[in-house]
Image (cartoon, rainbow, N blue to C red; front, side):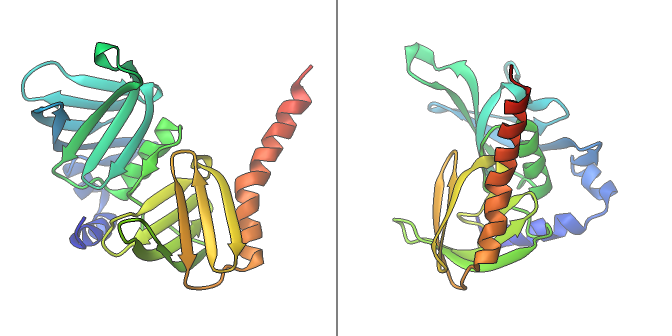
Length: 238
């Protein structure tokens, strides 16, 4: 994604609600409502239509042919970039191939970070959300690098009450994890940090040291809540 995408996110966050509604996005009672012209890639074929994220799920209405729709419950997971969505449900693949079907969409309009976060919350299951919100409040941040086989990215880790975001200037390689998306975290030393998600693992080189106090707070957010939940479940068992 080009740097202009970051500018678009900032502009969207400053628009009044009436303008967002006119663009196909409204927020009422924490309900996701957004749409964009999109292309569905299936095999060697393409279908142009409208992709919608609504109150009950995700739908695609092609210009020709039957519509596709998924309730949030029927979405197994998704991979999301600003203009690209891969949605995986529970439907078997054709020709008795293993696994479940995935649906690939390219969107004309970049999905706003608020809508991406709402989609992740509505689906509930672990996903890969590559559209973090740069304006969401954070209690701490650290400059970091995420090395990859192809080179890597530079950005900022932002720690929030609801999860961890990794923002990059270009948007490439960015991520937003809810605490429910994170299985493990690790701090081998003050200059390295690992986020072990249920879908992927990111190893970061920190440009600033992570204090023990900050890591303890993150540990509590990831594990203590989970342990409290297990304790409560254990207390109700017979």
